[in-house]
Length: 194
Image (cartoon, helix red, strand yellow):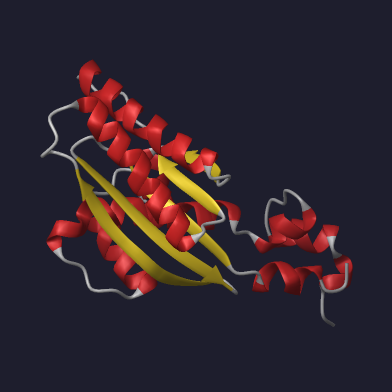
């Protein structure tokens, strides 16, 4: 176990984040190495010009597959649909999410789902944060220029960063589930430098 901590912390990981939608789908791709987050790509897939809902789903599948082929992500984080008043909108969103998940799974990419509240909480500390607040915090974390047309893209990026924060615990990766640094030290006394 002597070098496991260093191996885990230095392993490069690529995460694809997706904010599903049938009008606009946002995505962000990050690379994490030694806890440093680098933005590889982010963007939106505009689907409003397509009238046929099945054609939209095919395009989502193909575009996600293209991103996977270009960036070879280790994992995919996707925002879960939330229950609103409009059941039809939720069904459409669920289909878009399902097709994106199917594309990732077909290409052997592990998929993780996070609620919108969990993503916002993870990025800003506030589960009710606005899109603009999430985007501003991501700009501080990753250092990139934001254009207003990319707010759906930053939602996808937020899902990727949330996944890193949720699963990127080096202590958790080394010692299984831990509840904090004190628990980590108790489970790994040899890691403590004296």
